[in-house]
Every structure is written in C-alpha cells, then in structure tokens.
Amino acid sequence: MEVIAITRNARMSAAKGRPLARACQGLKAAAALNIVEFSPKKAAEILKNTLKSAIANAKNNNGVENAGELTVKLCVFDESVRMRRYWPTARGSAHPIARRMCHCKVVLSDVAPKAKKEAK
Image 1 (cartoon, rainbow, N blue to C red):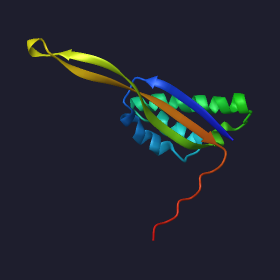
Image 2 (image 1 turned 180 degrees about the vertical axis):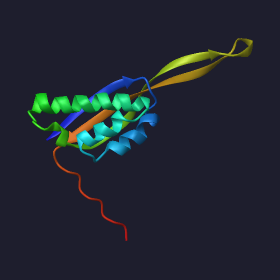
Image 3 (image 1 turned 60 degrees about the horizontal axis):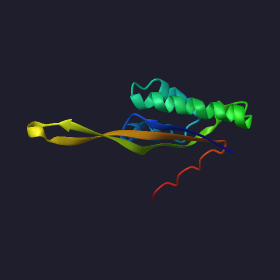
C-alpha cells in the first residue's frame, strides 16, 4: 500500500529543499517528521506540512491505525513554473528575474526499503 501527498507551487527553489528530502527518504514517517521539525530551513516547513498530510491521508483514506510506522518511500522536490519578473537597470533597460517555485511530493509505504548491496 502506498499513500501520496503533494504540495504544489510552493514559493521556494527546489534546490533548497532537495538535501532535506534526501535526509528523510527511507526513514519511518515519525522519524522523518522529527528531523523536519527541528530544521531551521524554509523547506522544512513545506516538507513538514506535506508529511503530516500524507500521514493524515493514510489514517483517513486507507484506515491505517499507526501511520507513524509507515516508511518514507519517496520524498522529492520538483521544479514548478517560474514567475517572470524584470529588474530595471540603467538607460531604460531591464534584466529578467525568475522567481522559482517547486512541488513537494511524499510517498509513504508499508514495505521497508531493500538494503543496498555493498560495493566490492
């Protein structure tokens, strides 16, 4: 069984959230929520809300009693649309600015991830 939660068009660059997403991947949902709660980054707030939404989806839609024991199978920040803006510069010209946005996707699963093989 897999449970999905997605936060769309969060006003942040996807590159700023990816290190935090990698840290949460493969952990239990409760442990991932613990990591995110004590992180000072803006991405942590977005990821925390998405994780809580995925846990709530597991409880309400799939009837899972202990959703904190589910494993974070996939946690990813993807690029979204960009807001195009312009910054006025000298002599009446302008420089373009791309205000980036991202999507945050969390997939919880009841199957534990397989252990990675060691390189010889």
